[in-house]
Length: 237
Ligand SMILES: Nc1ncnc2c1ncn2[C@@H]1O[C@H](COP(=O)(O)OP(=O)(O)OP(=O)(O)O)[C@@H](O)[C@H]1O
Ligand SMILES: [Mg+2]
Image (cartoon, rainbow, N blue to C red):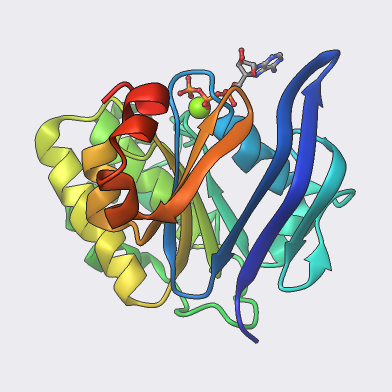
């Protein structure tokens, strides 16, 4: 089955605050697509809407044709959507290996690889010698890799990444860039939220620009790079 995420005219509220307006985007099999926007633009809310962690009140979100609105987050994960949130969700009192083992989930149709702890260590070599260390003692960059590893252990066919390099050291940014490129090369379909245009340019094929909950632009990275008006108005570049 071919992988396809489609958001069509999605509106999302938090209580009485209307946050997303008519958000329409799509991600197709094998693509790496970024959602770019400044602080508070609605990037995290878009990813949370896909996972049903924020509830969309109108529109449609389909994954491989199945409507996601109204489903529970665990059901969406089971359909093959993996979510790496912006806060690093690891168990500080479990070891690195235990953090990975506890996240094992059988693969779903269309997932490009069947992940094991050993394969996660190959993808993130810095984690391998830390297998027995408690999660709480890892650096920020190591925790980010462990968080990604935990999500991969669920064998997702679509990966949602929320600002994966935010707050990590420049050398870790380079390493994560390599790793995300490797995941893309393996055929994983990726949608990520980002403010860092340089990082986004390295790993994405296409971009959507969001501002105040509205999609203001979509196009290839090359088209965005050439569009000074959009960059200045919505990204402050
Ligand atoms: N739980 C919440 N309740 C009410 N408002 C919220 C909640 N979470 C976010 N918001 C508001 O929704 C808007 C969009 O927030 P969101 O977190 O989606 O932005 P973002 O683009 O991810 O920003 P950042 O770059 O800071 O991560 C902001 O105005 C924010 O204040
Ligand atoms: Mg955010």
